[in-house]
Length: 256
Ligand SMILES: O=C(O)CCC(=O)C(=O)O
Ligand SMILES: [Fe+2]
Image 1 (cartoon, rainbow, N blue to C red):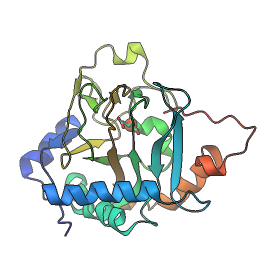
Image 2 (cartoon, helix red, strand yellow; image 1 turned 180 degrees about the vertical axis):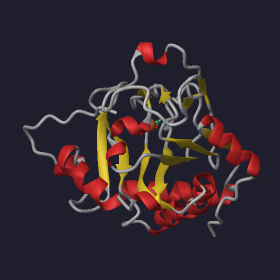
Image 3 (tube, helix red, strand yellow; image 1 turned 120 degrees about the vertical axis):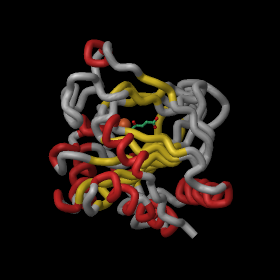
Image 4 (cartoon, rainbow, N blue to C red; image 1 turned 120 degrees about the horizontal axis):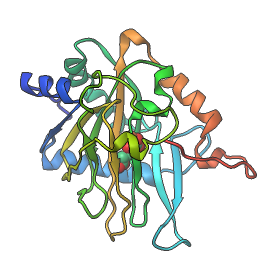
């Protein structure tokens, strides 16, 4: 049911030039309906230690409301979402020019009242410890608009090597670092897909509308740099565990 996406030569070369590409209607309406149902399903699964990871946030609209912020580490616990992550391996191999392996997967929920993301490059989140280069695949689950905080991407800054950290690890990009960057919003509809690499600067606004803005992301690296999914999650569990595993009097801060 989930056919792998086949990228054209033009899409591959555009991605290599600027670090991202946008595919409109990469999935048919019926397939994207299925994917949305999987997202609904996993959000109804009970939160249990040792299962998929759920993070919450306090609503910016009504501080009495706790919202699902993010679900991570889904592939071992949901067949459909595991097949979805697998379906992007061939297209990531086209972009990498070599074998790819899954690094992580998540759904960012950004419910009504959900917070945005400051400008950053994903490799700033400690990923360079595991590999030098990653590709994210974003699948639009709910329509993402300017109002509800769609993804905004910038071309790599001129004069910098293709793949380089502009900012520091574990901190968003500063005003100075983003001054010359030209962020553009990419509103998407369910079934649209965006590939962007771990050096593509991006951000998104908070969602103060009444509609949820769920986006799925899976991330891949070169198999020649190792299969790190298990060690990535084992390390993250120590520093930023899912809410259900947290120690009561410890303060956990989301950094990038
Ligand atoms: O969900 C979004 O708008 C962007 C999320 C993001 O950049 C991230 O999770 O690293
Ligand atoms: Fe990001």
